Image (cartoon, rainbow, N blue to C red; front, side):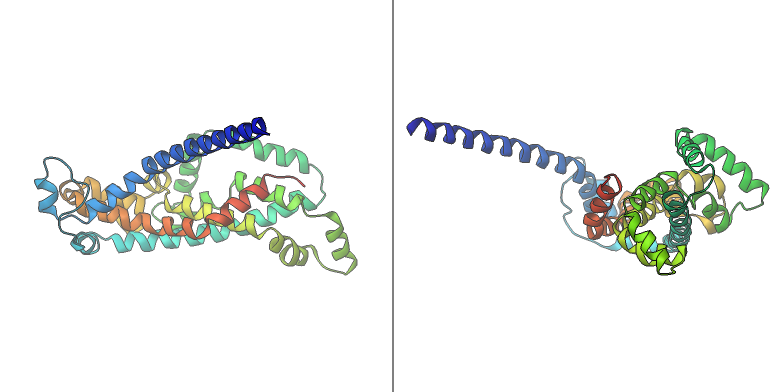
Length: 288
């Protein structure tokens, strides 16, 4: 009995040590990831004079001020950049959802000649470097005279092979019996898609929606390439324009305030929907 108790005690000690090591590692990793956000936030709350007078950077502002946030909206057109980004993000995301939902339904449920070949070729497009696609898109949009327009910004982003694949695999998990029963009841394919498949796959669709919003909000290369008119700048291009101007280089606390304002919507979005993102990704990648 004493030997059994001793073994149990040793096993319990090992488990405690393992958990302690895991949580210690996770804590260090979390601090390393979150520290840049903290540094950005605390610098945005410092006055311009305090920031410039620091020989050694301080981890806390001596006096908290929100004047930097006022300057980001009064001295630079940050509100215009945010509005442009909102229009671009909402329009692109909604159009993309409509495209990939219909395409995923076709590949997952309908039967037509060349379906497997077409889907394989579409997956093969994921192997093409983005730089080549950007060059092709730039030439196409330029030939269509759509530079410095919202349409030129939106069109190249209204579909995604990865999101199409993710949703198609999710649709394919829905039992065939539901589709056959809907046909017996006289339901059309479109009604079956909207009333059955979309609600069942809502976690994956919500995940795709959130990831697309994040992708659009952080979009930099394409908007930078296709727009040189400040009236169509997104926040990513706007913040770069602010940094390159005297305002961004000289007033670092105000620059940090602008970056904080731009980052906050995505942080809130992820914190609110993080469970749905994890659920949707796990369902999309699991068969059965």
